[in-house]
Image 1 (cartoon, one colour):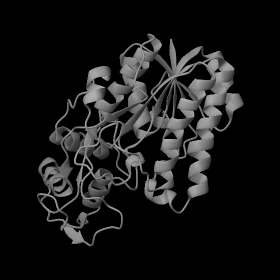
Image 2: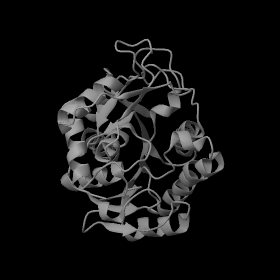
Image 3: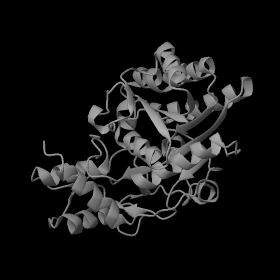
Image 4: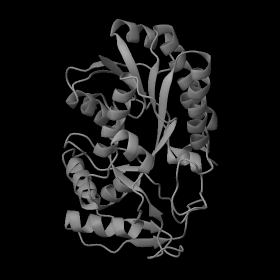
Length: 321
């Protein structure tokens, strides 16, 4: 039984590949290495260096490796940059998903777990986001993820397609010391890189209507996220009917200042973060309920904030630049 992981050479994708192998499922990886890393793919895992837009090659790989399910993470993932590069974002995330679904249909593969995003909600006006919260994406990236969910829905109306989409928030930490987040835009790597370079990390805005004045977000450990993908795929493979979307959230957010304190504790580097003006469009609070995923996908927050920070720091230190 083989699972195809698109984007499997990325930070999240490579963790998911390892989780599948621990669960006894074989994987193959399709990734064009635009943001992934070849060294993140474990030895013994078939790696295909191509973009998912090449549906013919992807379909051929599915047939050759007897793929039975797909976990789809490949795409352009930078929400802020997507505003300046909307056409590229839609090409990679929308047309890429269309091409993947075409390849699946051609190869007679009818099960897919889609990596969606909290960005589909935009700036919610509720304290806790649930799957019933209205979607209102505010970037081409968020819009492309919502369109991806629609594509799965519509494909399932036209031909056999068993699917679910996982909407997740801020993914952090590391499960193994050789994998770390290399994004130039995410909070954890930004803070860690600043400390490694002798700079002071920065907080954008400390006058929000939150307990300490800084933005509150939902942070989840990448290992917990990877396990949820494995369970979702296993259930689809077993014929279990899943909900079309699940939030993977903690139900209890953490402020940016609390993150800074946790980083100082984990690294032993004392610092007082610099305070800058708010960034346009940053909501005060985004926190999601994971109750539905806990019911169906064995979702749980099995790692503390200290685990998240220390594992991210240790993994990054294992990769000196």
